[in-house]
Image 1 (tube, rainbow, N blue to C red):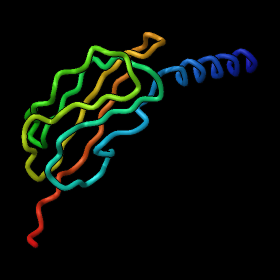
Image 2: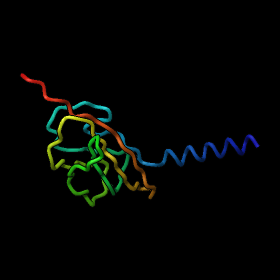
Image 3: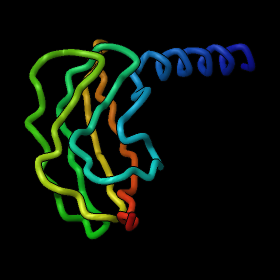
Image 4: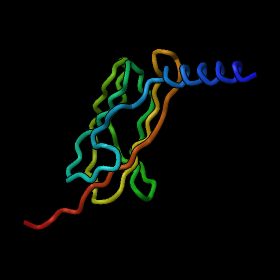
Length: 117
């Protein structure tokens, strides 16, 4: 029984490792950045087809982001099409990896309040 359990754990770990993770973003997760934020960059551990990106403020209001490219790639740059005021923002994303599994996640960042010179 222990051998079977160990084999199943190894199999599930291999499957989980096969999914393509988000490896980097700009702004970075939990970062505080200065305005203006002109783009969102998502970088993955392998080629994916990006299927959704939603940028919301702390009140849950959607902010305009450029259309998702149709290309399969490891790195995507999407223009932020409106000025982001100081505050917290969340990026929710979804993609389909080369293994055909859907991966998704989110990260938060903060736009700092401008400091007078």
